[in-house]
Length: 93
Image (tube, rainbow, N blue to C red; front, side, top):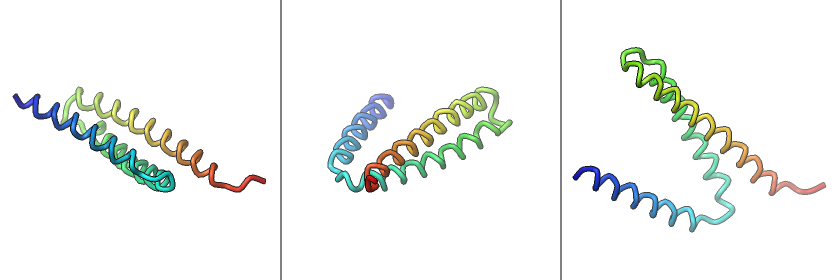
């Protein structure tokens, strides 16, 4: 029964997140993206802590290494997208 509640929360959060992002003006997307990149950087630090903790077991180390990999891709991709968005606002020479 707990799984049904968790699935409901997931679906509700996806719907609410989609509605909120859709209503954000285009001028605010770049600052929001920078904030999301900062949060992803915190995720990398947490994943590194999990991957380096010997007391958690081998499974946690693999899961932590995978989390580091995914969070790093997210951070790099986010910064590339932010850089591209900021380039759109530069004056052409």
